[in-house]
Amino acid sequence: MDDKREAPEITPQSKVLRWLDNFWYHYKWPTIIIAFFLIVGIVGFTQCASQESSDLTLTVAVGNPDLSGEPLQVFSDIMGDLLPEDLDGNGAKSIALAQFSIFTEDELVALYTYTDPETGEERVQIDGLAGARHYNTERIQSLQTYIMTGECAVWIISPYVYETMFQGKVEVRETAVLGETAFYQYYDAVKEQLPPDTMIVLTQPVMGYMAKQENYQNAVDYYHAIVEFSAP
Image (tube, rainbow, N blue to C red; front, side, top):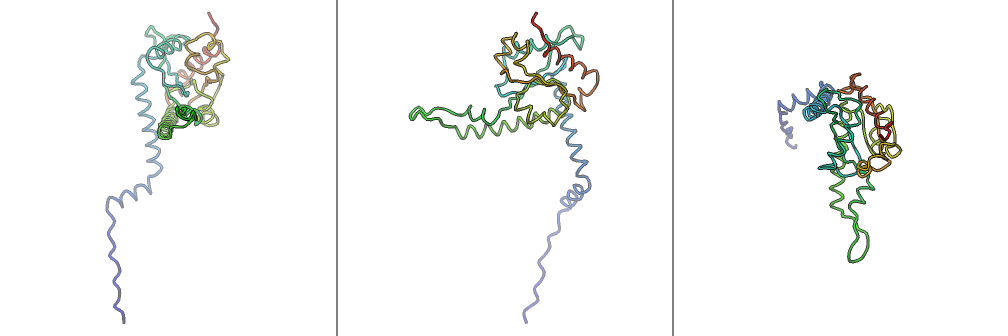
């Protein structure tokens, strides 16, 4: 008769792992919700800390490179001058500009396509394109998180951003095509930075700074100041 086999030794589960497993089972959704609001709070605090002297936040999310240097200053000055009034009473009208460079797949491929000097054929820089896709995905995720903070209600965005992150996903109140406005036709500095199919979008956040009626009304007035602009 064969010897009776001994049952394999069962390794006791770590007390820490048991505690974590039990905690996650009972508090999964509260933890997720708390984490969400923590992220929202951090992003909102960062925005407020860096925009103390601004009257309103304007977000630009298109595929062109980020504005910087003199073009950024010129663009910010133009957009600040459009404010109907000095909201914080510090004697100057100014906007805080949040920027997100978001590209479509076709735009990314075009950026990393080159002509082979030996064959004359068009080729794609595979490694560069892969890295660009990764960073583009990160920026998309950052923008999606930022939208949820409720810190902004007036947006200048590409049709791609509108269709993938705004339409049917947030409370959109009004939209306009930038190239069809007198504002776009008047300012060459704006034409140089933004394509004519860029959209101006007014949203109504359900939480955050712009969810307050007074702040939201300021955003509404600013949106109409842009789309109803008339050359002096």
